[in-house]
Image (cartoon, rainbow, N blue to C red; front, side, top):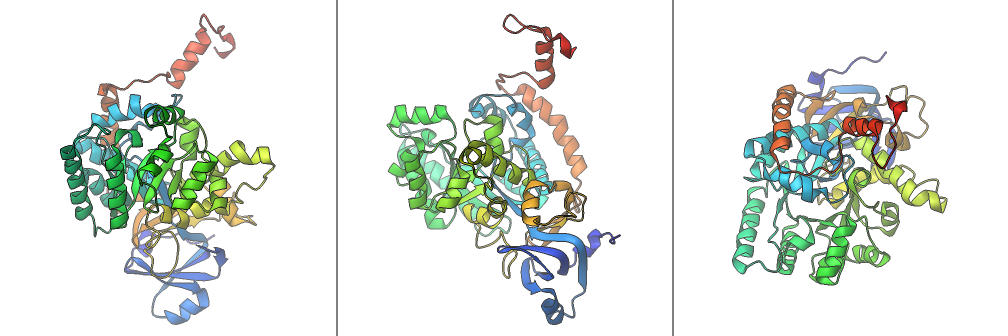
Length: 478
């Protein structure tokens, strides 16, 4: 039996780790070691070589363990996730009936608390970075920034720059852009928060605002986020109002490019895929969101083959990176691969890549994180692979996509610091936060002017048992 790891062993300022496996950008390797120092990967290579080069550093043997990059959530709404179960059974565009009313009712304290709880969920699920698309809650965005930083989660944080459309005034636009500039300046050198500008959907901004925000992001080397071609209704509204689909609208005002990250992209024509490719625009592929509240599945397998950059995102559904990779593969298989006789559907490594280094590139942090290599910031996981599910593996990379679970994560590191050990923070009281948020969440949901169209599971079952004028009673369920 392998000796257990103690959290104190993982909190030294310098760590020389000798796991059974290391996941590099090029694939899975054995007999390697990793040296972490000053928040970065200081040395990576064959174990014997690192042992010789760093004989003065005590090595920590990790038999049966994998050291892998922390995973990237390419699309999140941190202040929505406490109400995620409101999405079940609902038709698309629930942001109009649920998320906008819910977020608009939150005060700064609850924004902070709910964002910190969401950050904890992300870390527990194997994410070390999330890309947040911006909150519609009142108050300062610093509440979200403080929450993620204190939780120990890296965050690409969007500030919403909606000006309402072409009827907005020059003064309104200047005010919004000044606030965006202040936000960018406040977090320009932050270790854990990376600023981003966002517009919720193209139709809620003027053409000049879309152009200005995208161009400002390009100049500053940060990303511009917006939801595009997600739901059929929004595509049709854009065609009626602009004579163009949302992605075409962005292209027409010069808002696409390497700085732009579009969320979802589930409804794309072949020409629009070529538009993404030619402008080097990135996409967040959100397969669980498609299952829960979408109209379609983004053609991520085709995007990968075309070289279109994309990350995997949760869209604040469930913050479990392993289940997200599994969903990414399964959604492609059901929506596209099975009909074409494609039994591989990305061969596992495609989704692992886009959950790590390719995802980091899509959210604008490819130079900082996403892989275990010398010089990059040490955002990584220690995962137990000596489990009944994986002990017989002959293809560990693919098995991580299909079989791994978040409860196998022993330790989560961000910026070289141990943030979670066996799923719980090492330096703050998560259970106290959980109690605080739980007390407020139901009250916030009850008070917000949200409109749900589907009953809860128990209410739906009761209706099914009772029957209706349309459907007969199901006495067999009693």
